[in-house]
Length: 474
Ligand code: BYC
Image (tube, rainbow, N blue to C red; front, side, top):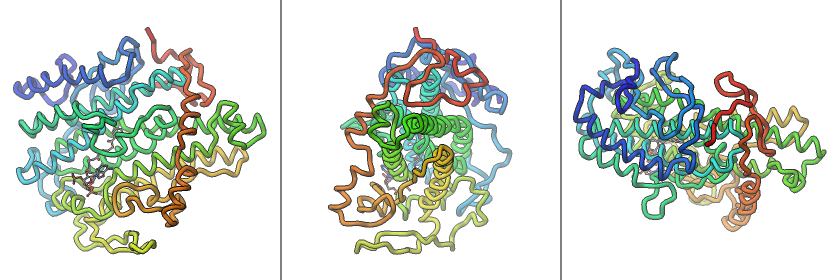
């Protein structure tokens, strides 16, 4: 299905056939653009950025590259092609036809999930809005802006669903998505992680590695939804999401690579000496990792959740790649989940599988996170050092679920609260860590040049050289 770029709102949903919906979205469009100007990347409106834009949703068309000024980016509505006679893949409605409209009884639940998903997209743009001023290279600046415009489009994806399927309530929610702001004291974003400031590029790489990966798992779960328009929307969003995680994965690898070079050059593993040479010592990197991983784990919700059981039973939200599971009903199965025993220890609780879905998905997420960590550790090992980076225990520093507030070390040990509070500074970035990392953030905009704290990427974008002028600053 080709995307119609002649329309004011590019789309592949025959928007022109539904004048009421088209008009409603055309009224929302200028408000989105106002939001982008106020809350999006600050001060780069005139820059020409080498961006990828989808021209169709198939393999050939979804990645067309060219120089674009960000406010002229063609945000639009793109759904993956429909699957003929698609049926529901799990839950009590297994095998029945997928829904093309929202069933009345699931209206408010579906709306809440779509709003929660939609809320994260502009939130991340807001979190990252000042990073352009401290970019380590034009290559990185371009990647930041690519991520930002696509998150903007993902907001469009959810706003389309709200307008098209939820009537007046949906339109009101679409307005609210532009009213809440990341970190705002009165109207914050819905989920915790999306209110955390991202003021340095190390945090940006951690966010795109860990938090965008939550996006991957949530979108995969929603791609299984019985509500077919949601499923098709999320399926297409996932094609864009891969690049965001690539930015995080390779970004962290490049920071490590540069640090290893400095360690070799100076023949030292001493953090202060590495810092004095302008690189990020691995202990600091580990603390940033601990922060963003633990925060992102909260995004999966509670270990035992009646919400999650309800989503699964009704067919609203499945497990990522549901087809890989032998049992799509999950009525009799139980999951053994580690819970605090209330006496400072751990106990294993048998939870009905449907209630344990958040934990099941969190488990898959943790395994996916480990892949990058292994790759980073290979770099360190190959350079001849014994340090290993580690994912902290999933019970460490949790704010949501059974382990919320529990004094657990990164190794997973429950310790006395006082000792835990005292040692938090060893495990999480301190104010001075953050100040140090910020001090490294000097803007580099000469094509092909990199800031001293990060190694160049292995290759450029779309087969272009690393020294290509990915952003033409005006
Ligand atoms: N912070 O039964 P519970 C992305 C709320 S990222 C604050 O434990 P449930 C992206 C929860 O909403 C993916 N509140 O959990 C990445 C519920 O509130 P209500 C975003 C939280 O409902 C990077 C209550 O606690 N998409 O795309 O099973 C850049 C009890 O909930 C948090 C989605 O999340 C938290 N961390 O599951 C850009 C998908 N966690 O309803 C984009 C849509 C839980 O009682 N959302 N709560 O008022 C969902 O599927 C679910 O809402 C959750 C929670 C998975 C978040």
